[in-house]
Image (cartoon, rainbow, N blue to C red; front, side):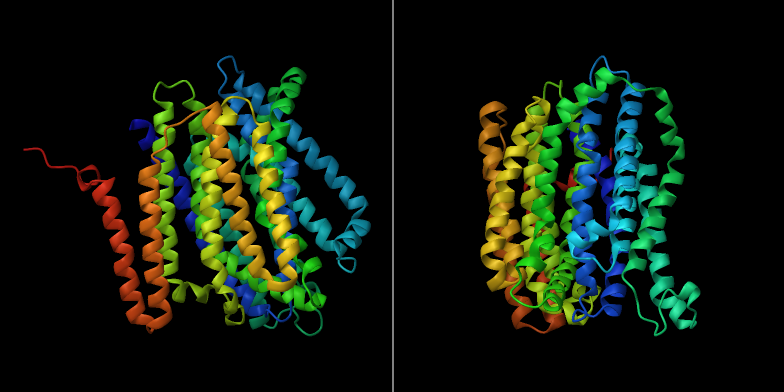
Length: 494
């Protein structure tokens, strides 16, 4: 249990920072969805562009975060040389590709459908390049078990982003100020300034990480570089297709939607805004991943490692199910995080959250091929998921709009998860507590049905009371079965 307590401690810190950062970041959603109405499609542009960004960050880090943890924890590792080599590799790729994109900005913008706005491409690519570079110093902080600095920088970055958005969307217009003509002649909000703000925040993060970036002076090892690339390329493929599972729908939606371009971006705006509410599950998954990845590699030689992995899976599922029920219990309050013109898309929230749970389980299962250096399996599993996702989207988006995107994600993650589990049990068998997990899933489904019925049939306050009692019921089951009160509140010694 000490291993699990260490994991829980780091997850709590990463989780708190992630939740705080995401909560602050949520302030962007009501601001932007109020200023950009769904009918205008501007928020659809933001959703579409950030989908490309999510793919680019995978390409520009090319599996080096996981590779970094693997090589830092090898017995004969020169940790400073490992860090410096990875930092130089990622930095060089980011710099060279940024120069290429800036030179070919207009043709790329034409290809993506933003020929009238090549600045979208230029600004966002440079931003992603900076983010990819500093991903390695952030990984170094995780590897050195410095979650406080990691969390502080993440929260500070989001806070700066919020402040600048408030200035742009509320402050300057309220004062009737238009510096450098950023609003045009009619005080029209321009999407590109959302991207400029992100670029500025990323640049500030680089400055705040200068102490860690100085590790680049520890040298470069070509032999180590080749070994890392050999280990990393399947992880790159796995990460790329895994990210496609999350954002491919937003990329291809405007091209598959059965309507005008304006209507397509309007529908995508609704979907993109409602995804934000469901992202509480992504917060938990991300927090768990930040703590779990270095934890797994550091415990590879422990005698009880498989038992620890099995229990970690169980508790991950329990608490993500609890988060799912909490969000759905208070969805009628959380919906105010987005503009009213976007509320018609709220029905996708439970589907997307369920998909994120499946993704978290899939990630949890992924350690077996990382620890046994069979990372190519991860690429295959993720590729299967992308194929399922693409097929469902192509067939059903023209008929069912963004609902097809939500269901495609859930089905794709479920298929990837199941395939990974059955293959993993052959190569690296772990005795997961399947019966306990199934019990909690059944209980959560029953309680969700009650929450859904209550929210639909009762007025706001009575439904909140009923839903709260149902969530408390699930929490009581957890406390009774798996987390006894005397482990949380130690008994007094006489």
